[in-house]
Image 1 (cartoon, rainbow, N blue to C red):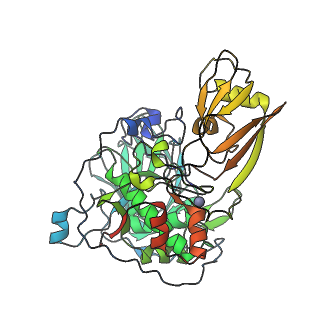
Image 2: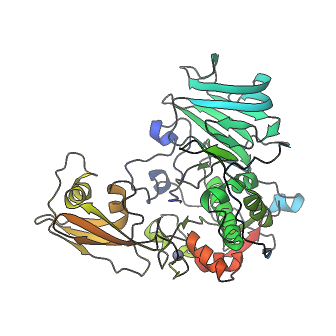
Image 3: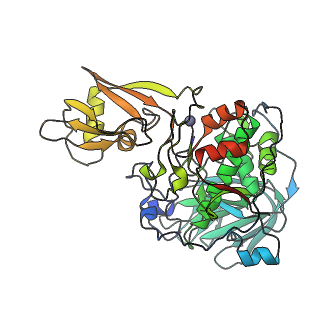
Length: 469
Ligand SMILES: [Zn+2]
């Protein structure tokens, strides 16, 4: 389930970590440094003048199709692909012609890789994005290992003196990167640090068909999944809209942005699984082009798995949170196993991680007691004062969650009990808790609410707008 930090700098010329937007030293729920230095969002550049369309909420039986061993959908022609993602339609453009479906660029190798395995089914064309020169026009690639050289990229044993290659298959889905089959095109970049980034370029609606199933179980009710499609579409377009002009991609395929597994994939235990389904393609089609806007502008629709009873004020966690992301009550996620949770750590590990892990070389402090300095349950992030005698460091739930061993704390909302040899955390929710609550959407759908009603519960004062492509 997503954490949804903002994508960092996405330019090819950055330092090794920045090239993939990674900011490892930062708490993962905070905005990236790139975001902190990002100029303010331009006002009034994108004004939605299209009429707001009511969403069609079909009463359809809950989709329970198994995801295992589903065959991918039939091949289809990948017609007139675009090389660059378009801006959201301007008022002038919309007046003169029909809006065009946006293209999304997804980094499917977050962090960069030393090599990857590439398969291409059927005929394809390969070009250099540096020169637009055609490098190959052939039929199929099978188990080709892609590596980097000093001057560029190497596919199998064949070196190319270019740092940016695009593979354009005649049909879609045709491209497999390691264990994932993707629709659309693939771009390969040799980064400044020699690592390789693979970026899948495809129309947003095809991308969303996988995001819906990657982010939300197929057994969740139709209205919840329709809401997920609209929220994910808005999130993705917001990232496109705010990408640096030199960025090589708009989103990561991981929870750093939103999870995107592709058409099918092989999991860690070797099972071949579907990354999209008839159900996900249907809810995407039913909501085609529909996004959330606030005062006619796109905003970042943050979301998390389980809020645990009340969503968190967006500005507690994200620099670019709008007033649509204010805290609201949500008892609809009560069925989730993470609505309330308890976990524990040894006192030694807690002290070590809480007081020293973020300061290299600093000795761990012996903590005598922990005092919660925030008021729980009002949409604020938990804050604590650690009493270590002379020193009394303050630390937030976000920081503690980031410092403790991975997976220990499901959310930044918890209370801490210090015992003789151990520390007990009583927490609520899963994820940062801002905005749309996925399990809450499930609960609301089961209570008979429509996708529109569900979205309006979590995002205050917003409109639903159809981009009309
Ligand atoms: Zn909730």
